Amino acid sequence: MSPLVALFHRNSWNVFRRDFMAWQKYAFSSVAINIFEPMAWFLAIGFGLGAYLTLGKSSLIQFIAPGMLGLAALNAATFDACWGAYERLNFNGVYESMVTAPVDPLEIAGGEYLWQAFRATLYGAIFLVVIAGFGLVHSWWALLSLPLLALCGILFAMPGLAVAFMVKTQEHLFYYFSFVTTPMSMIGGVFFPLDKLPHWLQAIAWCTPLYHCVNIFRALVNGQLHPGLLGDLAWLVVVMALLAYLPVPFLRNKLAR
Amino acid sequence: MNGLAVHAHNLCKRYGTFEAVRGIDFDIARQECFGFLGVNGAGKTSTMKMIYCRTTKTSGQLDVLGMDAATHPREIKQRIGVVTQDNALDPELTAAENVMLYAAFFGIRGTAARERCAELLHLMNLEGKERSRIAELSGGMKRRVAIARALVNDPEMLVLDEPTTGLDPQARLAVWQLLLGFRERGITLVLTSHYMEEAARLCDRLVIMDEGRILAEGTPRELIAQYAADDVLELHAVDLSRAPLDGSVRRREQHGDITYLYNDDNTALLARLAQLSIESTRHVARPATLEDVFLNLTGRELTD
Image (tube, rainbow over all chains, first blue to last red; front, side, top):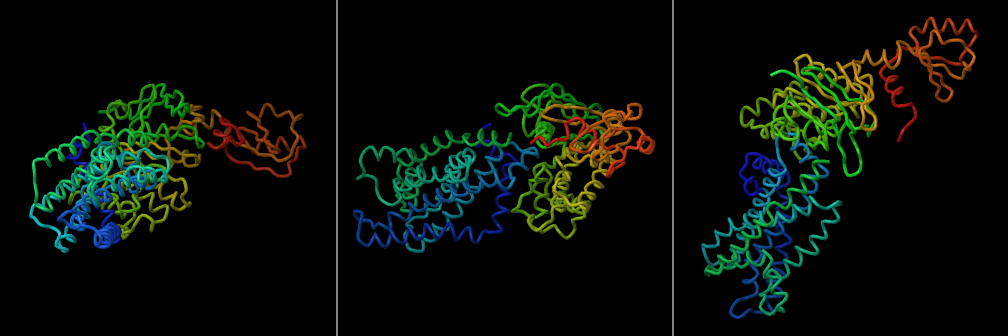
């Protein structure tokens, strides 16, 4: 059974509920932290740098705004999948107590996917409201960003959890941030179009899921849908299918000690 | 269904190259209280983890409630309760939330879960602590929350890894009372301890483990009779090398300047020593305990 199937197991929803109950107690600070930093990037680059640049007919801030949705999903899911899940596994005994009940590590992974879907959707939705406030949302299609945010949350949770369950110390999580997520957010088409990048870098960028989800967010927010988006969506689904099971053996191994 | 609560045959557990459990055999009857005694690293916790299906055996046979632990972990977990050494309570949730969440994992939800939670916290004397965060509770209260949580599915068997380690004397006594109550109600109890007194009070039968093996098995009384004696006389700084005591002393041990004489009657032995004009600067006359059995079997020196 894959974690994507386990998503629908009763216990996965209970794992989700656990994370939600814990989060409720510090929801305000969590939201503040997760929104403030990307907002600073958005405003600084969009208005600051954007004042000096235009991209054809579009302004830089118009380009960045939908990209921030992808970045919000990436950050929301990655942060908690890494730090949070590492603590739940190694410090808090959260998973340890779960597996003394009839809960399989597969269902824990499934529950964490659901939880990161929630986080990505919530933080992305707040961003969507903000950019709408700046008049940067041009179509009702933008509402479809919400399910896409959930999908991205699950997708980005997969490698994040795998890393959290794999590493020996918390400091090793920085490898993942420095070598994977930060570079991905630089070349994922969030801040600038990729067509002037060297070809080899474009090829790498094309492989990242962030690039494809940003493509879709941008089309939805601008109301410019085209058939090519189905290809982007297909790639996201392929990456999800490939990574879905990845965290489970690491978690199973750690919990069986 | 009756039969054994746990059956283990030639059970082994290896972590990498480290052999935590090296081929042990034991049977735990239903409704008995069974103890695993040993120092840290004796293999008690690894054995417990196999019983509650947290980890799988490396080789051998292990059946829990008539089911193979390797192939039926979910079914076994559904019917047992577990209290781990460190409680594993969720520090981000309240006491009640901890119990309720656990109930949900067993499919108990809504009103049924709330009622069960209230009932268990009442049983554990935790009224008024429902909304307390785990960090605000004392060690004894945390342990009681962990026990309440373990009872949520009305288990046939309760597995407790060092249930009183780290508790103050009152809290320890409270846990003992609870466990004795569970035994009365017919719940099979499996526990580990390194307190002999605890094992002697609670356990119907126990095994003594050391370095992954079982050294001895029996009721507390049997073990004392077999590996110690009725009484122990501890003498300080005496020379007994020429004293003809062989008839009255079953076993003699020397550690530093303390001599331990295992015998059947301290009063008679003291009289005999007085007759022989052997005087100790200080002596302790006491009944033998499981402590003596344990130390006889594993040696009095610190091993780690």
